[in-house]
Length: 369
Image (tube, rainbow, N blue to C red; front, top):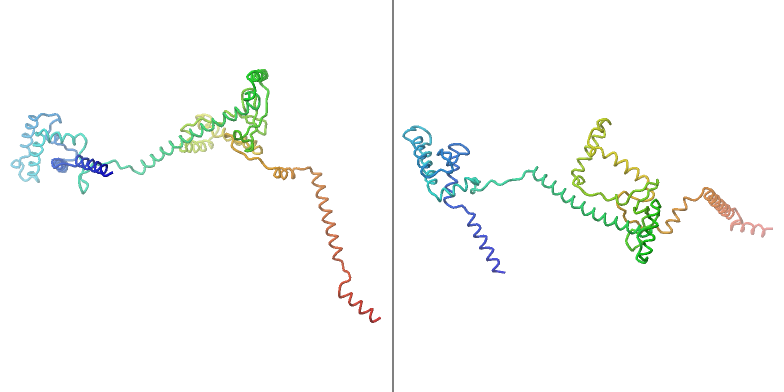
């Protein structure tokens, strides 16, 4: 354990030593900063001497002599800071004529020179703004949403495959495990001879658990359909939609907003727009019609979900309000007669009779007589 900590410390120390600036580096940084302040921003050692970055030492020496004549203090009497500029030119020429220092300067020349940040020289790092942060979060959340859509799509496909196989097996299209292969061929041939034959079957919502509820499906030929109250059928295989980035939250939000705005335009303009912008009305009509038809049956447009069986008491309670009008009127008459009998019986009991006070009075009257 201690050895690992020691190795980590040595590695970090060597990394800090490699990344630390040397004395010559600081000299180059100071020269670049002073040169840009005096000669203009973006001025380099090569541009200051009017030579190319690939110039030889002889060319640099020749350019230095020429530039030194221009900046000599004797020829520029009264010019401000001319002595500093002349001395800086000599240091720059010395750095460029030294192979090691020139190689170091070329590194900063190509990769950029660090800037003074108050406590030292640092490179100007990229600082993301609020826009960049929001854009990153937008892309990240849409990628996660796309992943969730893919997982749900695979889950829906497995669930639809289960319902299809279970419905076909119940309808005899797929022979169960107890039926021989010959009987299976007979059943398949019979179904092939009657392609329009429809069979209504009930499939458990959970495989091997009929108490969890059943789903009513219709098998016609080799297709399985989800019935609706109005007699329409929806292929169960069409309930799972392949995922796409257009279904993620941000593109779908933009599409829905655009469709709402387009819905307010005249029909002739709407017909000239792309079909993707006019799908909202069609989808709404289909969803509304199916939702109205399936409200009583409990079907949905998405893949079927779990539904519990209702108890017998709940069914009896549900059936009692749907009884005939005659039965309901008879029951109400019986109830009303019973109420009248109870009222009359209770009223007879409450009629005045010989109470205790009247009996005593009668006894007194009898004694007097």
